Length: 342
Image 1 (tube, rainbow, N blue to C red):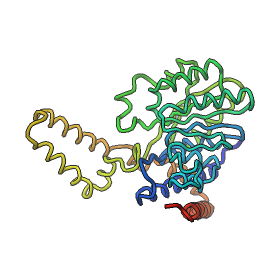
Image 2: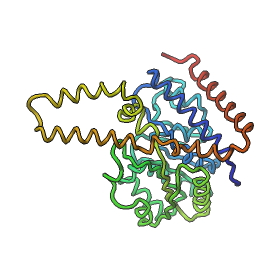
Image 3: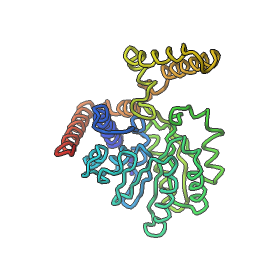
Image 4: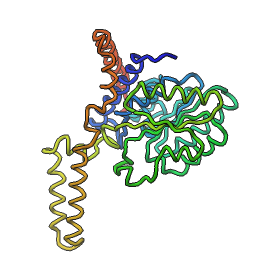
């Protein structure tokens, strides 16, 4: 299959606009609970999903909507599910972290690391009833510290299961920087289990597409799993409304909400010592400064921007594609809201 940057950019743009629409619904209070988006992951997901065929399977993490959309699952059903409607993909019972589409062999879970056992199960089934098919597991770098994921990678290696383990590494485990909680090298962990490890820039859709294609062909040919380590960013942090990002984006609005309680706590008699309180304030200040310098705020790390640069030689074609996708997302949003149960 030849590289088609136009098609890949289309997948990425649909995903970005779709998730931006989700964010608007969440901010409007129409979607309840936490919301974890994949904005910033588009190149990693598109570069992998573009290789999937009928009979292939996906095991997804709590950011499953982008991969589901790119795989061709009805976006209206996905939106209705996120809105908690009975007409949603899972009858409104799963929410955004537990999306399932049986006919596409796609399943997501909010349990960190659960993608490993799901993908191994899909792949084991493929060996018996769908020869030549593969399973893909998408997970974050924090999941590499979960036992069930490592056990699944071990099993996949021993049994030569046709799995592509895709680690979407943004350098954060929820709100903790990964290097503070993860020891060693993730690629060497995979290699220690006998699994080839491939390092790739997860912001470069062409690089991901090439690496994923080779890994899947190897799996389809019976050579077992591959570990794809993709460096990426999450522009919204771990979840929508991540406080530190909110403060950096709108300091005049957000800082008073933090400064008041902090000052009151600092001056409160009793409790922790002055030294401990100063240490707490220092940690908060350091976190804010780190967020100001965070790569999530650098436009150069936007995979959509990088892919778009490759297509600017044909501006009219690019404009037509973008306008078409914008209309599609508007129509999807409108269709999802029709007759929505309150």
